[in-house]
Amino acid sequence: MTAPTRWLTSEQLGPHFDDGGEIALVEVLEQYRRRPVHRQKAHLHLSALRHRAAELGDRARVITGPTHREALEGAGLTGDRLETVGAISWGMRKLVEELGGTMLEPRGFVTERAVFDDWAAGKKPSQLVMDRFYREVRERTGLLMEGGQPVGGQFSFDAANRERPPKGAVSLGLPDPWRPTEDDIDRAVREDLDRLAADGAPFIGVDAPRRFAATREEALAALDDFVETRLNDFGPYEDAMLRGDAIMAHTRLSVPINLGLLRPLEVVERVVAEYEAGRAPLNSVEGLVRQLIGWRDWVWHLYWHLGPDYTTSNNFLDARTPVPENWWGPDPSTVAAACLSDALEQIAQTGWTHHILRLMVLGNHALQRGYDPAELTAWFRDAFVDGTAWVMPANVVGMSQFADGGVVATKPYASGGAYIQKMSDYCGSCRFDPKKRLGDDACPFTAGYWAFLDRVEPRIRGNHRMAQPLAGLRRLADREQVVAQERARDAY
Ligand code: SF4
Image (cartoon, rainbow, N blue to C red; front, side, top):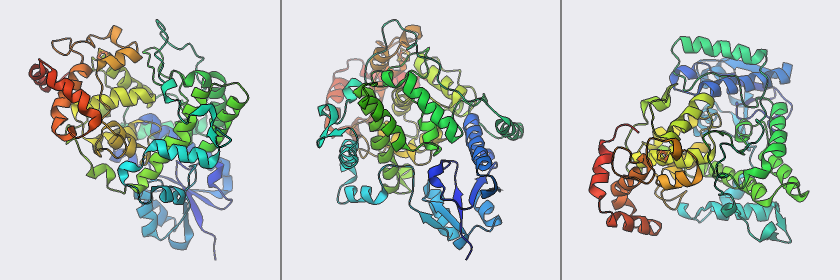
């Protein structure tokens, strides 16, 4: 019997997905005509795929087609001939099942599915709390544990991850992060994408030299660079924003990790070793450990646990506004709000923003304005270089938009301009005033916050964590004017 060929996707490119047989890598350029994807994301994925094919040499079988199904069927990879390492989306799982292929256990995560299923058994969706999952993973793996107790006396140092940016600073003053040097593979990918763009493919954002690792070697260089230049500042400034510093002390390692080029556990072990050697502070190290063995694995398992319809069947706050046209195109520059404009500009230019811009600016704005959660999830998945089918549903539908009514988050993450003013330097250069909720210069986040509460009040009345904000809404003397103003506002 012929050994099966293993199909690996552009999210499974590290050596830990490969056990030595023939590897199929599938290129579907046509997908970029079918839906908007960031131009630099398309480039990164194709570049990473082709670099892996070059590394594998004769063992790689690059196949192409108008769809993944047609490519695999055309190459005869069905039934016993096809093997995959888990599936990375419900769509892929269905395809492999229909083709009769074999799915091995997924790789690239810390907690195995059976272990998560045991943990989740008998719990209601609202009891699948990330903090409890994270605690269980720490205890099980022994990471940052000492004598059965968490190092430093507590599992989470989240409260030490919220420092404001240094007063008067325009940046954290850290060295420029590692960047790759493009090669002939990158240039060939660019030519293919140029042809697609000239032919009308609807790319999001602009083209630019590649910024992120596309090979294992590059990913390890990016990890080294982060540990040497940013790890120490990562913890304290995790939630801070500066207009002149798009990257701050963030890792950006979600990009190579989500391409499968780094194992999350090797990143965790590396930073824990830095802590143990006395070279990195606990709030930085624990913050990153929490992101990787806690949050990342948790949203991966929730993706499967909550089922294929989670994104499309949840709209608890009845949010129906389409994601604005200019979020999907290459030029978002019509936005006046300094914080939102900068976040959209960063996406257009690089396909990446750090997490607090995602949550408290982009997500917060979308929540307030009632953007359709399924459409917004698709935007986050396709406009961000690290967006995947599995990572965005719990993050966007659940955490950011509260569209599942309280499975992932316990309350809507809405906040006014005061939070952005406190944690950033955006407001000083903005035409709006974060303290104002009425008038031409009313901050769209501050006024938007109250208009949001007014709109969703009937749905969130029973949520005890919203009792105080709703009491504030009821005391608002100018509630009606603020709501009318925000309903009429069509530019920010
Ligand atoms: Fe953003 Fe409002 Fe501050 Fe302007 S004033 S930067 S819109 S929070």
